[in-house]
Amino acid sequence: MYVVQLINIIPMPSLQQLENKNWGNPDAAPTYLTKRCIELTKIPIEKFSIEDLRIMIGQDLGLAYLIPLAIEKLKANILAEGDLYPGDLLNAILKTHRSFWEENKPLLDHLHIIIKDNMTEIEGAGISLKNFPY
Image (cartoon, rainbow, N blue to C red; front, top):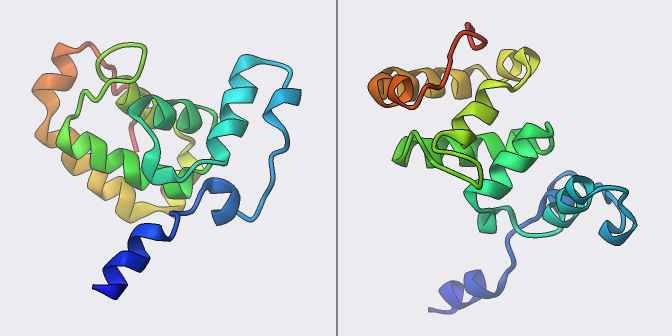
């Protein structure tokens, strides 16, 4: 019982904590996107919405922590949707640099399985895999 209570009061880490990096003050950011990204580095990653994941992955921020979370979301719903369109999270992941996937082969293998199992839905949504040959 005591352990459960401690787990519930210990905050989950943010990207700022995980990467031991402070991106600065969001209010000083020059654009809305930059401001939002800085804000997101300060909240626990477990609280990220689909849209939060899409934004940060699209900006190549925190990929080592966020891609696994995003893959779990895609496993539940390949067309998981942020604020843009069905499948926008998948599309953001598909644009991730090749170097990330080369360094994280198990994640790539997992993603390939999810994609293979959901090709009908992916094609139906008009999401192109042509730029994701690896």
